[in-house]
Each structure stands twice: as structure tokens, then as C-alpha cells.
Amino acid sequence: MADDNAVTLYSSAAITDAKKNPFSIKVAMAQMLRGGAIVEVTSLDQAKIAESAGACCVIVSDPRRAGISRMPDPSLIKEIKQALSIPVMAKARVGHFVEAQILESIGVDYIDESEALAIADEDHFINKHNFRVTFVCGCHDLGEALRRVREGAALIRTQGDLKGSGNVMEAVRYVRKVMGEIRVLNNMDEDEVFAFSKRIQAPYDIVAQTKQMGRLPVVHFAAGGIVTPADAALMMQLGCDGVFLGPEVFDCLDPYKKVRAIVQAVRNYNDPMELAEASSGLEDAMAGLNLNERQVEPFGDGGRY
Image 1 (cartoon, rainbow, N blue to C red):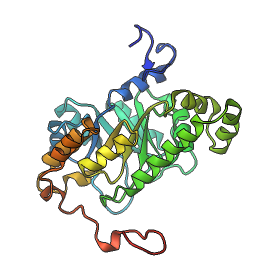
Image 2: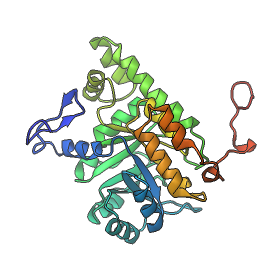
Image 3: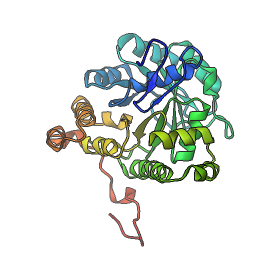
């Protein structure tokens, strides 16, 4: 904290007085999660495992089933909040501001306006400035990320695989795309930023702030297909502030061991020795998360990898 009234965003830019701009408080709330792993859970038992393994936050979701996916049962969220000491996040459908109102009323710490659920509104996202709670939103490129920030998202999640296959390729693709676009922006003259912001369909002031900071102006996590310590460390070395782990991390014999190993990898992502130790002895823990030939996507001219 720079002083009693201001919130410093990272170390290179300041946000206005928190009393006049509640968004700065939300950004500070999101910064509390930096350098951690957020684990998706569908039951109280899974939430307790995630907390004991060192997760910085749990995100509550409904078990995957056929049909329309919606926000989780509020009674489950309340039960988990009462049992855990770490922050609790819950998912709401894109554009479904009533689901967000319900989640805020029961005291969740963060709301994820998630494209992984069914879409409630095809044309409009939730106006997140109308809420006191901190919002998380997904993106696949820089323009999408900055549009979500303008709407009030204080944490951006670059979203990869949504099928729970354990394939990190899509997450890598989109993280590299966002980071690559930021590097292009950093090398532009001031006059070029106007045209760039128009091309990516993002507000100029936030694009200019991104150029000044050399990174997204809010916390940036990666999600999708991250199921090994090496996957998590890869996302961190690519420039992310943390990772989301899907419910597939519990589909193994020892979920505590696997989640703990990934948490350690996030904390020590630049230390190969620590990563080797975290990755050791996880063969049984990875059972069920290997792609078979039918799940492997073609690469190049019909080749496989």
C-alpha cells in the first residue's frame, strides 16, 4: 500500500483513490491471488483437499453433466465457505446478472463469469461495475481481455481446453497470443496505439495503460489442461500470475499429492530442481489424464504429435 487511501497496481502504475474508485479495491482483491493456484471443486471434500494442498482459492462449480450448465447450488457454496479459511469463487453464466446477484448475496469472494457454462446472453456481458464483488473473466486474445477489463473484470483468465482432457496446448496458444500482442504494442509509437486499439476493438485508455505497464493492467491467470507441475510452471514462465486447475485433478488415486505438487511448481516455477522434485512420483496420480490417439489433434499436414 502506497498510503492509507491509494492502491498501487503492481509497481509501475497507480490507481486513483479507492474511496472514489471501488474498482481499485477489486484489483487489490485479485492481486491477493497472485502466485497461486485456484482449484475447481464440486464438493466439500474436494474443497478441503484443495485447501490442505495449498490452493490460494477454490472455485465452486456443478458436477459436469449433460444439458445446460448453470451456477452451482448456493447451499453447496455456503457449506464450503463455512468450512474453509481461503477465498471462495463461484461461476455464473455469461450475461446472467441475476446469478451474479445471488452469488454476491451469499458472500462469495469472487465471481467467474464463465464461458465454460451455458451462455445466458449472446450479446451482453454482465456490467461488473454494478457489483461490489470482484469478477473474473476469460479471454483468447488481448482485445477480448481489455474489453472485459473495461466492463469491470479485475482478473483475466486466458482460457484453454474446456473438455477436461489434460491437453495444455490451447492454453499455451492463447497465452502466447496475448503476450505476443502485448509485445507488439510495447514496440509501437504513441501515434500507432490509436489504430491498434481500433483494430483489436479495445478502449484506447486501457490499451495505452497496457503499453505503459508492459503487461495486462490486471492480474492474469491461465486455465485449461493444466494437470502437471510442468504445465503450471510453463504458464508462469510464459508470464502468467497464476493458474486455474480444473476438476480433472481429482480424477486420480491421490488428488492431494497432485494438487500439492502443482502448487509447489507455481511457487518455484523458475527452479528446475524444485520442479523435478514436484514432478516425481506422480505417475499414479496422472492416471486417466492421458490423451488417447483419437483425442490428439492433427498438426501441420495431417501429421500427429
